[in-house]
Image (cartoon, rainbow, N blue to C red; front, side, top):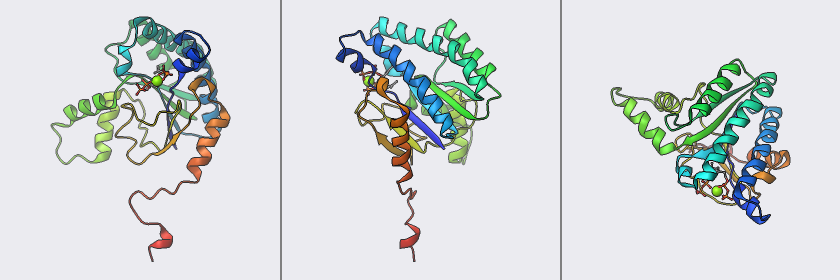
Length: 231
Ligand code: IPE
Ligand code: IPE
Ligand code: MG
């Protein structure tokens, strides 16, 4: 099962407390740790987290710098825990606009966790689904009769995705907004959507479990009719 999460609401969480937005991102990083562990415990095969969109470069420089620092710190601190828990880490998105120190942290984390088989943790940084699709289309130009699966492989290449991750089964967005914000547009073709009003720093294992319970009650038809109606 592939779960993807748009982790939204850090800024509002901080503003509500009279704190700078950066404090919300620090608190949000703690929710990431807890959610990764909850997902591994729940037996999720692939977890893709939206950490920084290509559009987020338009935020104030101090906020962007703070986020980049947090990503680097997260990778340094969590890599050992991921190795211990057999979680394979992979950062997806563009790499050509990332700071050299962050790139080194990404490569280190991906290398040290490469044998992880329990869960595939993908963190989307400088990610834009439209950009990835356009990159994959450029790579596809020479191939004729491309299947959706082959196109998805090209998307993986464009995204620096190390392991085939398949389509998203469940997409969760916190923070109350009901939009995709350029996240996994191709991969979410038949995803079940779960919107949660809680702000990302407040997201707990209980919220995650609620999303899984909601998903378990959905009927996925993929365009077909239900078995009981098909006679
Ligand atoms: C999500 O929280 C984290 C990032 C986009 C990096 P926001 O920072 O978007 O928080 P809100 O939506 O402004 O509350
Ligand atoms: C989406 O959140 C990106 C991440 C959670 C990393 P945003 O806060 O950037 O999205 P919009 O601007 O509300 O669509
Ligand atoms: Mg937001």
